[in-house]
Image (cartoon, rainbow, N blue to C red; front, side, top):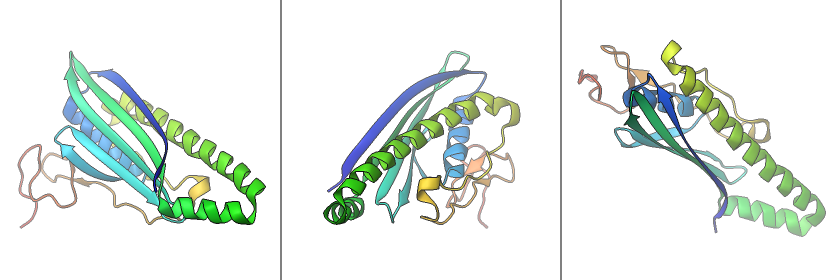
Length: 181
């Protein structure tokens, strides 16, 4: 049983940033927030992080497109409780129902607040990306989920063009430079 907690979606347009820069900024930001990133196309990605002790899985989907003199990013963020989370909740409900109800409500509010914070910080990071074009610092987990998962490695950069690379890339998707030799 998987219970969808919520899905939040937004789309924003940015002047002076190419879709290549937009996808690079998007990947860098979500990796810094401990999401494992998979590119579903050259300008789309899906990220996930999982908190095993909570049974909480968070997903982010992003798609970058050219638009006028800039680019647009469509973003969707969702969270779900997996079977492990449902079992923990059921055990808690049997043992101490009133406390579980209160803790569950607080947890849901925390999950949703964390999602909104992440999305707001993402939009601010992309807005300022053209100034620094640097990855954000790695973030630790939110207070309600401390020590649930190991860190995700920092993104790799192409030695020739400096663009972000997937960890298993043999060639840079931006300039074609060979990476493994």
